[in-house]
Length: 209
Image (cartoon, rainbow, N blue to C red; front, side, top):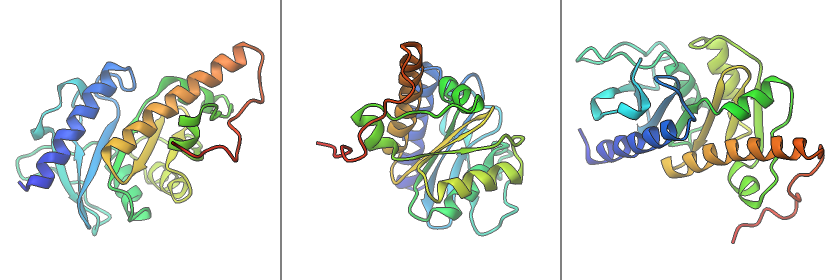
């Protein structure tokens, strides 16, 4: 195992455990990955709980073969959502990390047809724009392809009645985006509770110090 691969998996484990602690995933829901070479990525295994991740809970897959997804040599099976990651990396050669989480507030808003509004400076800076897809069953080509199509234009996409995928050139940035997506959703709900349906961050103000 290369030093780079080791370090990426260590970072993914740290993110996974933090995400579980914040309620962004429940039990073994969600899956996370990182690119380890131009044509290869590691993704969390099927059925693993985010707060119990170990280095053995990751499977390395190739981007060259669209049918990849077989268990590793030691029998570890990749997440059933491996296609979500596979398609994202193929659509975005600039991306080094894909996080598929289940942020409750963001998913509920999108499922109800409500926009997740970017209200704060951090929302605007880290999220940019937010894509949304219709509901497709997990593990399907339709889900993976529709999310990848949205990721061509956005760094965050919410899949209605399901979860979100966020991408970035580092694991740290991807997780910052995931955290800000749920924070933006919670801020949107607060604004709605206060009777506000319009406030968003100024379009010309997204310059970060």
